[in-house]
Image (cartoon, rainbow, N blue to C red; front, side):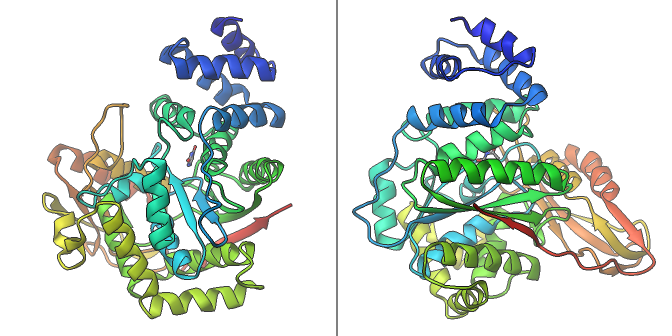
Length: 435
Ligand code: URA
C-alpha cells in the first residue's frame, strides 16, 4: 500500500477499507506518512466525506492506537460531555465540577480552540500553572480526589487526535462531519466512561450551519458510541449568538467562576442545566430532567460546585490566588470599548463573526505554532433583544495587539443586525437524539 494511492482514492470519492485506513493513520503516527500528505487527505475527506462505515474505521484506529483508561477502581457512574465547538461556550468548565458535586465522575478529555471556536484546554491554560497534559496516573489521582479532571489527548491517549487536530485547525478542514465525529468519539471512548452527552452545536457560530447536518453528525456519534457500549445522547443546541457575555480564554474562565458562584448569564446557566440534567439521567442519579435541573441549581447555590472547581484547579497545578485576585488572569490586556453605530433592538449577533474577531485579537491560532494570547477576547455588554442607541458601548475588546483592533472591530460590527421590534427568544435545546 502507498499513502499516495489512498489519498487519490479518497480524492476521487471512493470509500476506504479498514486496512487502508489503518495503514494511513498508523503510518502518520509513526512518521511514515508526512504532514503534507495527511493535509491533502484531510482536504479530500472534507470535500468527499466518508461513509458511516469509514467513520467507524477512523474512530476505531484512533482509539486503538492509544490507551483506554481503566477507571474501574474509582467508584461512581462515569459520564462525560463534549461540545462540537462554539463561541463563548464555557459549559465544560462549569459542568465538570458541577456534575462531580452531584456524584458523577467526569473524566474529561477536552480539545483546544479549533477554527473560530474556543477550546476548553486553552481556556484552562489561562489559569497560571494549570496543567492540561496529565499522565494517566495524575488524571486518575485528580479524579479520585475531586470527581472531575480535565486533560488533553496525549502521546498515550488518542494520540492520533492530537496530531490530526492541529493539522485540521490550520488547513480549513475542521467542518467535516467524519473528522469531527472521529476526533470527539476517539477521545471520549478512551476515557473509560459508561455514558456520554454530546452538545451538537448548530448555527452561525458552529461548524454545522444547518439542522440537517447537525442531525447527521449527532446520529453518527450516537451510533459510534453505542457500538462501543457507551450510552450516548446528543443534544442539538442553538449556536447562533455567542454564549454568555465573554468570548476568549481568560474572560471565559472568569465568567465560568461567575456562573459557579451563582452570578452567570441566563443562557449559559440554562444550557448548563439542560446538558447536566441529561448527564444525571444517563448516570442513573435522576429519573427526569426537571428534578435534575433543580438538583444542579441547588449545588451551584450552596457552593458545592464551585468548591469542586477550586479543588480541580489546585490539584491540576493552577494558581488558586485567581479566586481572590481575578486580575491575575488578565494582567496585560488593553481594553478598547466598541460602540454601536446604529439604534434599535439587537436582532442577532453572528457568533461565527464574533469568534473570528476574537481570534484576530489574539485568542485563536492562525498557524500550528501560533502562540495564543490567553487574555485576548471580547466582553459583550449587550445581547440579542437589548435596545441600544447609537454610540452606546456594545462590547469591550481585550488585546495586546493594537493593530488587530480595526479589522476585528469591522468584523464585530458586521456581526450585528438591528430591528425595530425585539426578536423572538430562541430555544437553547432544539432536539435530543438517542438510540
Ligand atoms: N471538539 C473536538 O474534540 N473535535 C472536533 O473536531 C470538534 C470539537
